[in-house]
Each structure stands twice: as structure tokens, then as C-alpha cells.
Image (cartoon, rainbow, N blue to C red; front, side, top):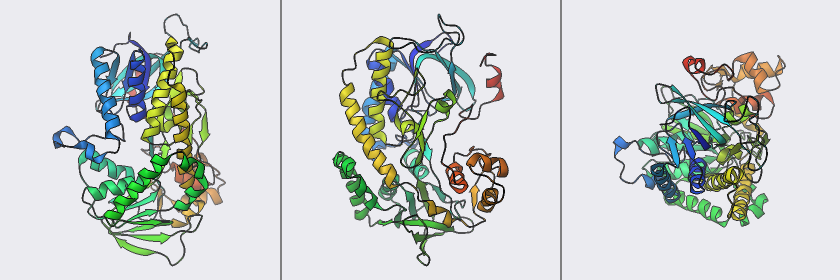
Length: 486
């Protein structure tokens, strides 16, 4: 338990690969750390755990790189017992603000004053299903908030049985269930191969992996490929695994329609041109009872952008935090690691977490950064591959040709493509915000996390970082308990 008087050296938000690595590395370096996470157990979305009641004997069988996670999880438990880390599960952080009441500092004096200087932050969270308010104080904050899936709609995508690719993997890892017996995996990006492999290994029949991009695009990124032979071997292993299970890989194809009445019964798979436009007459019907679909990931940046952290545009068009060589954001006292700095996968997240922890320890206690050079080199090598991957799978502009006028783009508010096109063509909307004001697209429960990328594309604008004062729904009682200056 923490109290309002507790103040940590470092607060880490998110217990996925980046946050977990950062927390244990910072504790190794002597910092007093708190690790806050919305989940009940560490691991994040990547290392999901089966519910304890399911009695899974070998949870590691569904994971890649489980050994790396298990080692850090053991270190976390050791640091908890020693009092160096306070792990706060089921804590959903909804805002981070400057702590004007910190020791020796008055309002507005929380800025850094260089190496060895101090910052002061308050992190507000809601806890558990009862959404009880909680607050922790820390000198430095490390954001490891992960990402969510990018979805591009198509006719029939709201049918039961059409789920996110990451959602299908989550069902399998945490619930030990399959989304269907015959599952088409579709979209774009390397996640598709991992999802298809997991589903097939668990007993599902996967008629095809439908990839909208062409793998020849990787040929333009030869230097990044040569520097990462391990990634190439990993991709080859995924491909070989699918081949053994007779799973077809259809590149430059897309699911352009899902069919069914009460749930999905089949999909239309079409060949695409270079810009992702369906080639007329190429569609063919594939029977299935589930579709796992995703078009990459979008960094989750709400906490960072509310603080004013600068962002950059990644090669796949998604916004990510602009970080320096030591994982510092543009706001003094705030670091970030993992997908928040650009989608790159678990291995890169682990490296960035350790690098950020070493940087924080140096800033707060002048702890020597003995491994910094090696970590920076490894991070740069992995980041180069991540950028090559993002460029290869960037959605083509022609995907909007999949949509008919009745296709719901915003599922929460049931806004069809026709209304968005009308807002653009006849009412002068030029970006997602204008479309939102004119049509309510993005005003529902998900607040545009699901439809935002598609709306931005239909509006002809870039995908911009979300800027929200609250990163998740918060009860009024929690807001009412805030000090007047917050």
C-alpha cells in the first residue's frame, strides 16, 4: 500500500515488456520504484496470462520469448520483497500532473534544472472494478503505455465473428479459447503471422493469411535487414510453421467484404494493386466462421500528449513520441519506452526500458551508465528494422475503395462512410476533428481509438496524436477529490 506521503524516485506506467524491464533495471540501480499497470498481472498485452482458474499447465507454450519475461518477473518479485519496487496492479493511470506541493518547491517550480536536478509529479489512477481513486508521487515518470490495433473497415466488419487480430490472440492466451474453428487472418503487418501460427497450433483451421502489403517491399530496406539476421530467421520460422500446417499466405490481397446474417459465414478476398485498390473481378469467396483482422498498431500516447510531449510521424503514418538517445521526451522529467516511441516489438521494448532506466538513474543519482553504448547500438539496430517493417506495411490510400456508402466506419456512433464523404466533399471537412464535429464519428465509447485512423484517411489528413485531458473514463467522484489547482 502507498500513502499520499510516499514519494518514489521513479513511477513506471505500464507493466508490459518495456515497463517491466525499466522497473527492474531501475531497482537494480538503486532507485525506489513504483510500477503501475491496468492489468492484474505483469506482462501487458504481449505476455498475457491464462486466468488462474483455467489451470493452464504450460502458459509459456503460447508465447514467444517467454524466458525473457519470466526472468524479469522473478526479479520484480525479488525487488518487491526487498521493498525496492511497489507493484500496483489494476491501477489505470488517467493523468500525470506536476506536483506543486513537492518538498522545497512551490507552484510552478517543478522544472528540471539539469543533471542531478529534481522533478515532482503526481499520477492519478482509478483502481479495480470499483474505480476507487488513487494517487502516487514520483520524481521521474517513465511512460510505457503500449499501443492499440489499427482497424480499416470493410463491408460486414461489424458482424459477430469479425474480431481484431490482437483480440484473437488475447482470447487464446488469456482465455484458452479460439474465436472460431475456421479462421481467416487478414490485414497487414508481422502480427498476422504470429496470430495465425498461434491459432493453427491451438487447433484452428486457418484457410489463409491475407496480407495487404507485398513482402518485396522489404527489399528496399536491405541494410536494416542485414543488420538484423535474427529477425529474418524469426520471420522464416513463422513462415515455415504456417507451411507445415498448410496455411496459405496471400500477399497483396485483402478481405474486402464479410458475409453472413447472424455472424460471419464467409469473406470475399480480393487481389490489390500497388495502392491497395481491389483489382476488379479478382474477388473470391472463402468460407469461415471467424475473421481475425488488423492493420498494424497505433502507439497509445494520451498521457504523454496531455503533458505536452513532442511527437513525430513514423514510416507507417502513425504518430509516436519524439525521444532522444536516452529515451527522454521533450518534457523534462518524463521518459518513455516501448511502442510509445514507435511500434517495434517486445525485443526493442526490453532494450528501451533498460536504457531509459539507466538514464533516469544517472539523472537522479549520477549512477554510471556502464552499458549505455551497447544498449544504444542495439536499440538503433532494432529500431532500423522496425522502421523498415513499418514502411513495408504502411496502408495504401486505395483501401477506401473497399467501402460502400452503407459501411459503418464509426461503430460506436454508427456513422457510415457516406456521411463522412459528404462531410468532406460538401461540408468542407479537411481532418478527422472536422469530420467528428459534423458527423459524431469518434464521439462514442472508444473516443476514436477504433475509427480514428480510417476517418483521418477519408478526410484526407494525416493521423494525428490524440490529445485528451483524461486518458480513460473517470468517475466524477474521483475528479471531485482533486485539489483545486489540478
